[in-house]
Image (tube, rainbow, N blue to C red):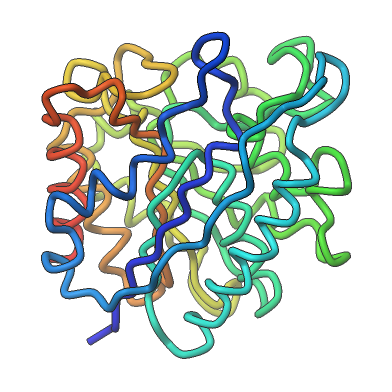
Length: 299
């Protein structure tokens, strides 16, 4: 039996303000899921909190690169230190975000230890970088760029921390739940990053898609893999509480099957959960669903 450790990483540094004078509410994700009894439901050991720097973009403007870059770099290293320690001890970290930039901490931790893969369950690829601004617009919000940064695309102060970039190889990344017709699909395909869109998952079944995609993430290619779960992979009809809800996403049963196959694999070494915003979920139903899905993945 793996020892699960529940660790909070409540950073919102990678998202734009939802309105002038406000900050993204994703920093409340961890507390909201813990209120659903997630610690006990996972049978997890308490891992504490990695406290993020203050959200303050200062005088940042478009064209200045990634905002909060220095703070994100510091936080990534600190989070990686914690995750690395758990991995070395043979523990399974479940990291509650936060926005998607927290995945950089997991990627850096694994890179320190060897060659690992990533199974990202996300409604979008988060692949914005300086080379595709014509498609995705200018860089700025790391929460939409963490996969690009993890694979060595982007500014070195985030993509090459400790001289270890890229943290992930393109061929060791699997994406699940990207919307059909996403504009990044041609570039991802050309890079050799394997993508299972919502349409493919729906046509073939979530379980078979997950099992087939992970065949290349086993020894001798990789030591193991990490699961990145972004709540926006779900359709807004069941998960409206995200910063960028996009129609035609997965339904809960599809995500449950997909997540279960991935998280229960003996090669899976950890999981992070991101983007759910309790401020956008006044009755708590979306948060309760997300907690059910995470707990159910390990049942």
